[in-house]
Structures are given as structure tokens and as C-alpha cells.
Length: 331
Ligand code: SD4
Image 1: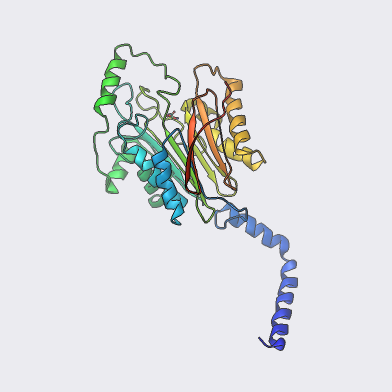
Image 2 (image 1 turned 90 degrees about the vertical axis):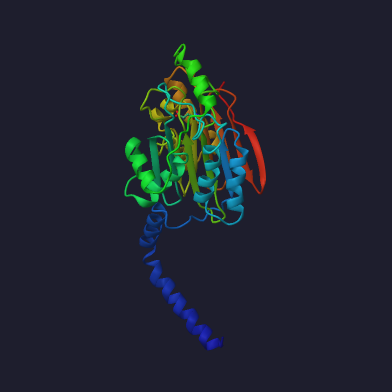
């Protein structure tokens, strides 16, 4: 470039800069608005991460392989948790899930992306992959949650197939339970293994998914925290994400995952935020027979967790390494 052209370009740029400085506050407001609407990615350097509740290493590894190949976090979390939904041995999620007290397997799931879009299904029956139906609700409808018959009708219209999700193992256990019909969810057993997964992709975008068959032997029609945005899952691409497992009623009453994200926004680390959300429950409720665990990731990719009782584990993937960790706990 000739020096004259360089000079003209330079002075044009500086006049532009002067003109723009007068608009600075307006520009910042616009930028803030764009970030709020999820249109831009804030500048914090994010480390690609996948984290999920309990010990679903295969699910985490599936999600990680998508992130590693440059895929989107939303695809990673959906594909990851689908493996657990399809696993008949996981008795808290999808196919093979424990039924309600009338013998119906009823499923709850939700999903949220980096732009703040969200979709959920609750009390959905006979569909193996509620998380994919939730994603369709997010992408193909003007709504956030579809329930029961309506959710099923929508799933069928989207090409999902109806199938019986009650396995022999879960049926036998339910029949045994019916002999006493004593409803007292066993800590870390009957409220164990719901999968909540959070991921940050290479573009620094955060998404999450949560899917469950809910508490074993719940009343018919009961919906837990897992399909409720803000309770079982919450994502804010500026701040981070959180998900919950355990007794959904306690999480619902404290809007737990939203609380964790808001606490991170205020500067708490993921561990500190999860702990504070657990403490809110402990302050109000008898926690002796109550398990709740939170999992969180912040924008930078730092992860954290906290539960009431020991025994809550989670899996983290970073840089191709899969690690199962014990959550910190109050007791
Ligand atoms: C629920 N939170 O339906 C779920 C149960 C769960 O591992 O997390 N199980 O209340």
C-alpha cells in the first residue's frame, strides 16, 4: 500500500473512531443487548468442557467426541444423554426407568442452548428419547413445555415411535414395591442417575440437557424439577450453566439451577454457587432423608458441585480426559 493510501486510510479510520467515541455509551448498550439476546459470544476465554451427573462416562465421552470434532454444545448434550435414555440398565432415565406407583413409565426432559432457547417435555410416555422431543419443542414450536398427551401427540407427528419402556427388571421391582407401597425414596438409589449434562464447545458456547423418569413410584402425573427450566437446568451463555439431581421437589421450591447460575454471575465459583444453593434447601427443610446434588460450569470452563449427602458423583471431560469425581457434600 502506498504511503498516501496508508495516510488516507489512517485518517478515515481515526475520523471514524472520533465519530464512534460520541456513540460509545449507545454502542455499549447495544452490545450488552446483543449479548443478552445470545447473539454474540462474550470475550471470556472458555475451555471446552463436558460435565454430567452421576457416573455416565459413556454419555460424557460421546458428547466430548462431538465437541472435539468441532460440533455444537447443543448437539453434544443431546447425543450424550440419548445413550443413557436408551440404556435399559439405567433405571432412572428413559427406557428401563422405574415406573410411577401405577406402573407407568413417565418421562421428563429439557434442553437449553447458548441463545437462551429452551424446550421441555413432561409426563411423556412410550417415547424412548424425550430429550430429542424437547429439542423439537424448542426448535419447531412457539412453546417451551409440552406435557402428557399433547407431548406424545407432538412426538408422533415428528416421527418418533411409540414403544413400551417398562423393562422386566423395573416391572419386577415395582411389583415387589407394591406389596408394601411404602413411599420413601431411598437416597442415592431411587433418586440416583438422572442425567443432567452441561457442555462448552470450541466456540465457547454453553448448552445443557436433563432427562429422567423421575422419582420411582411417584404419584401418577407428578412432574419433577428435571424438565423445568431454572430448576433442573439453566444456561446463561454469559455466565455458565447448572443442573440438578435428587429430590426434585426441593429443587423446584428453590429454583435451584437458576440460583446457581445467578450466584456465579455475582462472582461465586461453581463449587461455592452449588454449595449456597444446597444451603438454601438445608435452611428450610429436614434434610436427613433428602438428597439434592448440583453441578455447574462457568464461562471459563471451571466446574463445581455440591450435594447434601455424600455419594453424589459426576463425570468431567476436558482435553480428551474423562474423570469421575466425588461431589463435595454437606454431611
Ligand atoms: C426428579 N430430580 O424427578 C429427579 C430425580 C433424579 O436422579 O434426579 N434422579 O425429582
